[in-house]
Amino acid sequence: MKYKIVSDSSSNILSFPKVPYATVPLKIITSEKEYVDNTALDVSRMVAELKVVKGRTQTSCPNVHEWQEAMADADAVFALTITSGLSGSYSTAEQARKDLQATDPDRKIAVIDSLSTGPEMLLLIEKIAEGIQAEKPFEQIEAEVRAYQKYTHLLFALESMTNLARNGRVNPVVAKLAGVLGIRVVGVASQQGTLELLYKPRGQEKMLSTLYDEMKARCYAGGKVRIAHCFNEPAAKGLAARIKKDFPNADIEIGLTTALCSYYAEDHGLLVGFESRSRAQ
Image (cartoon, rainbow, N blue to C red; front, side, top):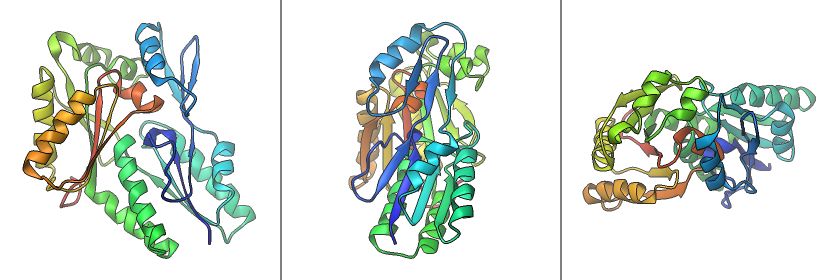
């Protein structure tokens, strides 16, 4: 049986050498331009251009055909999507699954709503890959990753929420607070897959302390941490150093956000996916 993992591009992982893997791109759309979240895009240029764009901006999820093309060359597929609370990606992936299984009922396809994005999706991808490499049955891998999802979390820290406001995700009045007098916004992806704003720390050091305190409050105890940053490596390394001080053997990886997560996180934003020792609250 040929296994494959397919995710939409909000995972920030456009290639994954450990197992057969593919992404389907989301898009960022303005009145002037469309940005496709793939390896050809200059993300730094996109981030700069979005700072000066006027009017409403929006995102577009992969269509059914794109999901079908990515799934079609495998007998057993695990498809992961950005939270259905932010995008229609889960719905189109589910329709692709139904259409493929209608013509081939023996094909195994599991579509998983991450209820999150970015580095928490990476944790789920890694969990699936471990199961594939261990040659576990499809149903066992699916059950294990859905159980594991109860122990993963996503926190975020933003210097700007302009794009979230333009996209209708947050109140414009709230968005104006971010970046004013050094105020950041720290929040969480809820169990329902929505973005919840928790704190408004002032300055980067306070923001990093707030992030780490919130990780510990959510029962972080030295498990995996995946940090994605939008051109803010010093902050990502600063958080990693705080974690390593308490948990020297913690498995921490740092990477850049690709287009979709850069759109939501904006310049200098951080996304932090991590494991906890108890179920998500």
